[in-house]
Image (cartoon, rainbow, N blue to C red; front, side, top):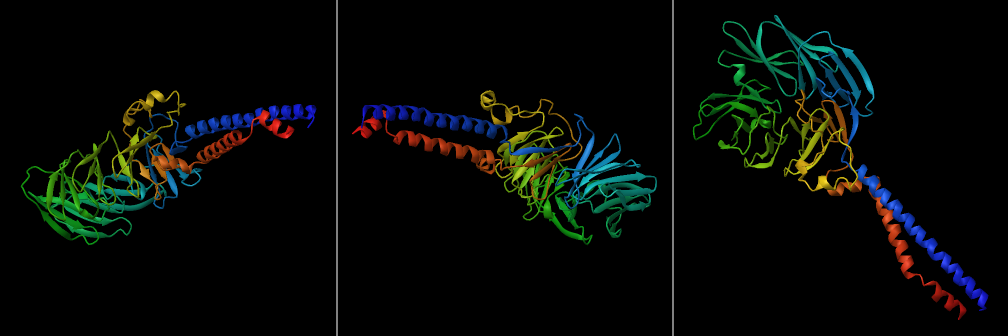
Length: 428
């Protein structure tokens, strides 16, 4: 090979090496950008709908009975608003002429209008009256599913009646021996119970209106109050700190305090209060703060309302804190958030310092568990809260592809011969 050809070949390879290094530099820049994009969009829950811009709204919110709509009742404006639970598009807004007490049930929001000798149950989602009772009703309580009513009618003697709202029929009538203040519905609305004597609990079946069973236990405990009745009437919370297993008759104290009338998970394995409690042992799994709470349909997550539009999410099996979110919190760059990550998870300022509100309605999961309805916002779960949930995000796969391209380019640079060696090989 001539000297001119050797110089030209050497010049070509000296130009080629910077071009390959430029490609590696480009992959690196794209990879860093993808990592930042992944960080800023990696929150497991995403805000889908903000139902009001007011910071302290006096509202009640719930899913419709079939879960296809979101219903919100604005108390000061006396207005009902409806959105699609699929597209979040507004559907309808109308005013309610009557005033009454709003109850959040499993069938949606019900307005109970109690006037002189008239008691009306109004479905806010359907904008229609479900049932109207006449008579002097002294007290009443509604079942969690919104389909049964225990009403105490005035008279000599007073009469307590179990009523079916949908059919309008009276299931059973009880004498003056039963008082409404002593009765509690079970969380699945299939039973109601009362403490009929010292260390004796009587349970009625709401389908037949008859006594299902009577449970007694030892040792004797004075001045107990019936606080909550679990699904299937298997577990009972007494005086907010004690738990009675109706299947075995065993009474024990809990490592926590229960303040919610319906605190159980749907399978009865967990109970929420100031702590997440394992109902099999009565032991506390995790310390909780504030409320109200709700369990997901699969009983794997527990949500606590953080003011009106943010929430804290816990693993309901172990009590581990998973994540917290609020629209008033902006995701920080990793360098700026280093100080936050040095704190324990419960102390990280994920939500606003104004985290002290008392919302009217409890949080509510959709039937598939992917939507979370808060009093003033709707959040959608875009990935599992655990670390492997990052693989649900397209940004994660973009980072992996760019990382693979970077490693491939580094491997090519490592295997490619040096320009001088290549030039000498051609000259030989």
